[in-house]
Image (cartoon, rainbow, N blue to C red; front, side, top):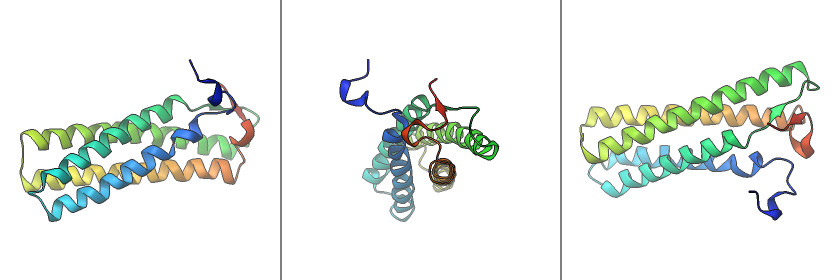
Length: 154
């Protein structure tokens, strides 16, 4: 059940999409600090918490998304499909990064594995950046989403 104060929004997606963006990009910065301070478990736990939160936020962003209507421009539909694809890819990579970070917290503490975890986290950040860029194109270039333009409920 949606609280009354949220029912005024035509779409909840814009309210939540910024969380995975910020959390997953911060995870990269903290993970890079882990590479320079490998013995600091607090940084590793912070990375894990940022990844887990970003992963959950990405899932919420996916589930609050709406579909583009057939009235939208063909290019906007193409960008929407790319946005949707990269959003799901972002979720799966953030999920994998979260699991890897947890495994390296508990059991494996090799430098090479830490570099691999960093690569997965950086890939996740690239994916969330592409997703965000495509979403911004939809909103700011094609006017899809604001005030419910060219969107339909799921």
